[in-house]
Length: 326
Image (cartoon, rainbow, N blue to C red; front, side):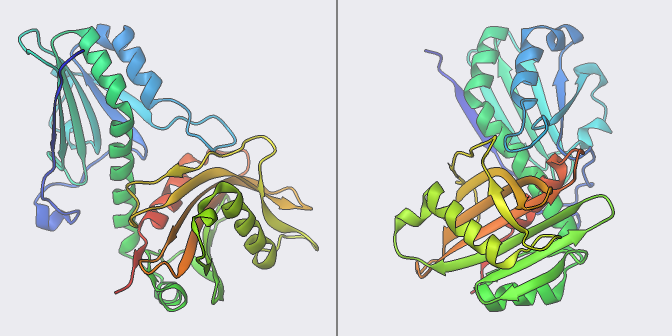
């Protein structure tokens, strides 16, 4: 049994670069920069394990796409410019260290940024430490990506859509200017962005909360399908949006870091009944503080035969921005 000292350090800097005094971070969307001591580390089992965890397929996408794109650099090439990268993972093998140590620092060299460093006395202990905590690391990087996207979108709001969400649901959410309000009912709102190449959007719907059975996958799926059939018609007569579990059956997850105290996450596929459209979705289901209503936020992407990970990540960031109005 290895004793491990874990140090999670979070800076008090805000996402506003003016207040934090840090330069804006760089790097492509969904990219992690891995800093190794030498190229041999990257080529041996150490680098292979890092690639295996950070580069595994994102669940709920129709084509294989990795969780993150990985770039690597040796410690001697880790320049001041590269220190501005948004997501950094540092490998350090120190024979003088008595035990493995994890350090997580927010906004250290740039803003927004997360830097994770594992220091271990040898490769085997490093790998044990990494594998034990890889899930935590992934969520830290996911969080930074969502924060960056939300900050960019927040600067250009669609005030009409923001007002409708607040009026109909008592919720506050980021709605970028290029997302438009398509449908507004007391129990259902549809907001979407249409371009020549792709479509992004999300639905918000609610019903009276009765009991915890409404959080089951069967209940969420049935409620979602009812709402989609009622409000989201397809491009041809008699067509409508629906969930597709023919090839992939999503497993519900508890989103512990969601803005509400408790939310059930589902990821899967949608398609259009009596037509040929489809794509990935992510949804979050939760109740209000008084447990009067159960809400679902359902985000989707349509980008046929093209990569969808980053488009869905953008929608996910918008869903994560939800808050209850005071």
